[in-house]
Amino acid sequence: MAVQFHSLAVKRVSPEAAGSVAITFAIPKEKKSDFDFAPGQFLTLKATVDGQSVRRTYSISSPRSRFEFDNELEIGIRPVQGGLFSNWAVRSLKEGDQIEVMPPDGRFTVKKQRAIHRVGFAAGSGITPILSIAATTLEDQPDSKFTLVYGNRQMSTVMFNEALQDLKDQFPQRLTLIHVLSRQAQEVDLLQGRIDGPKVHAMVKALLPAASMDEVFICGPESMILATQAALIAAGVPESRVYTERFTSGAAQAAKVQSDTDARVTKSISQKPVALTVQVDGKGHELRMGRDEKVLDAALSLGLDLPYSCKAGVCCTCRAKVLEGSVEMDKNFTLEKDEMDQGYVLSCQARPISDHLVISFDER
Ligand code: FES
Image (cartoon, rainbow, N blue to C red; front, side):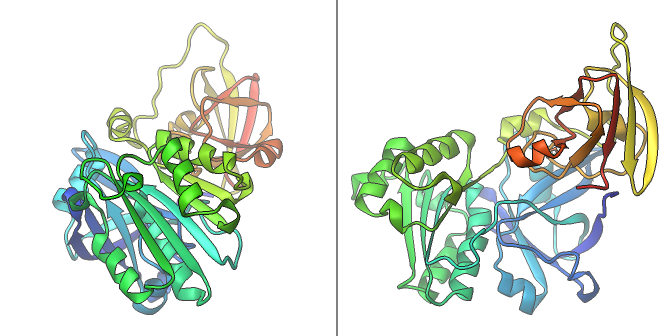
């Protein structure tokens, strides 16, 4: 299926801590079904920055209620060092601008329709999807509780602090907010430092019995995610209840400045090319590709309008199905084993290992 970007109007730009912004899009009534979302999902934005067409994903921070009643979706953008898109967005986007946005996507969502106690572990801008999950949980389920463990350097860099305080005022009994600060003195040792394995272990012991957690959401830098996940599982939280969402670091983003037109990869001349057929919108497109090339890059070189965003194996937007032949993936942070068993791959990470390959973007 070819990509569907929609032009959305920026309704509001609100400053957040440490140079971040919250950007609210107005969703026209006729596009509401396209932009219906599950808390925890992200939007892919596309813009031309410094002459390059760039795409980036940003998690939705607003709860379902704002979508349903106010026809709006909010994302949070924190500028990252060397980040082409984030710095442009923070500097340039203003109320009334139009920007190309792909409908919501992503799997970092609640799986149990009802849960008594959901828990979030967030670091920095990793709060964005967890804020949406927490607010929606508390609003929709009067008998639910949410515990948020949120790591930052100091209180002045806490993103969405006002929204969190409002939520706490609204649900004082049901929301537990735990700030862990690495560069600001805290009265309690447990709240001082970074969210890492020993810290999570100590929190589970002191405040968060493993059996009380129905679903756990972790979002932050990779090292924090891995340490938190491992500590929770070691403490007895079933792995199936722990969900993670990675975001790419500033350095990685800077290194990955990519455009829609950068798909022209030098083809290997020393190896026999692969016959690739790309199926999209019911049509087959044939080309020859090098064995070192990634399938998505090769397919984009045909000028096809294909879904992708991070090109780093994280977002799953580029998922496609191998119908004939085989590939291997460089990285995969998102596809489950059963999906891979069915032939699904991340086309941005897939390199051919057969002479002939047929891949479909219609079966996603
Ligand atoms: S584009 Fe994000 S995983 Fe491929």
